[in-house]
Image: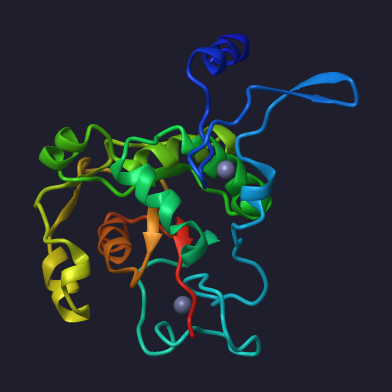
Length: 246
Ligand SMILES: [Zn+2]
Ligand SMILES: [Zn+2]
């Protein structure tokens, strides 16, 4: 979007803070100068916890034991993706993501995208990613909600990193039961053949799968498996938030 146009929109539709949902002023007066306002209140930004320090070398989860290589989950289970990255510690942004997902607050993606670039931009750019692929939503569900939050986040990341997003590549062919109601085995069975690659020939060798929240990684594993079968060599994943191992 053109910058001046987006500025005009800030006046018409004040931007909301991704933490408290209050209005963030479009402009601020600092040292007698008018500057453009931020995407989040400064005091609210301090509440958010970023994923920093020792993380699992596989899924990217913060580790309680900084000398460990893998988290409890990854030390007993193999994943189909090469490496995962996350931006926020889930607990600190659960309310924000809930509003982003269920209450139409797609505008939060601007902050999420910028935060992703600041924390992981350099790392992600060095991976040689050719396409960003959001976890697709079952079409009837997406129609009902009006948008797929993973795709909205993926577009924001794409704009910040300058890597194209490819939304039509993977399709969710089955509506799956809400994952929170199932145990690990149930989750895997629930996802069997839930995704298909829409094209016979995937020309990418390196992709980044994007979702909003990382829990067990089973959804991403299913898509990564399909990519693997299609000949994709490097499969990374990025989620907005991840839990912490206790
Ligand atoms: Zn706020
Ligand atoms: Zn892990």
